[in-house]
Length: 256
Image (cartoon, rainbow, N blue to C red; front, side, top):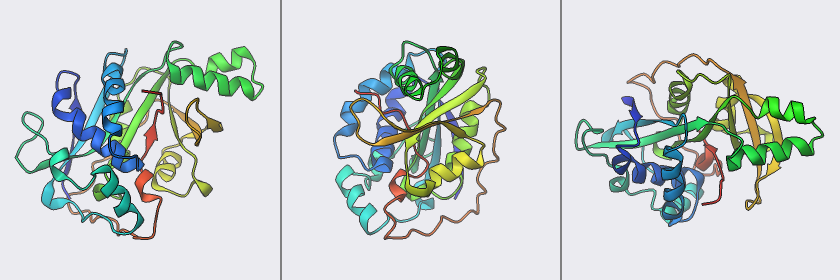
């Protein structure tokens, strides 16, 4: 598969936002219609200081088939199997058969942001001093969303997107939140550990979301990973693996 990563701008959001949201709800296994609820929040994020985004683009013929089994059911509910929903137009697309297959974006963290406030709340509950909380929750870049569509997972696209996203950041570290997984046994956790992310806060429940999340972080800079090779073969899909839908996933569960 030949993949290229491009810088996404707020001015071009009308070209990439809908395809990116389709990837988000498909990769996370959310119900159809979630896109409409999240779109206003993603648009608001574009205006935040330090916002930056990258997208991974591939040709239709390079993608592996839609998975079968439990994941196929979730793809059906979210409409994830519709190529038309992820098809791009010029100037982002170089041809008519190019699709968005991955999305990563984030921005500079700040005390007035919901995610930052949730992090501070969780850190205080652990008994940390105010000084220690401020040290951990300041001068960071928030990796807000990182998602790769299931038809393009297992090729290193998530790592390439992440490292490109933070390559020019001026903050001292990058932080993210991701759903807890038993034994840290999925591609997302493997990616973060491989890149040197360590625990900041574990088993935290965000307001309005019953799932446990982990906050992870690592110092910056982070070297940019090489692009996936054009001859790379997709990883085989295990039709019984229900964790595939959240692979390569960092997400900010801020209420819409």
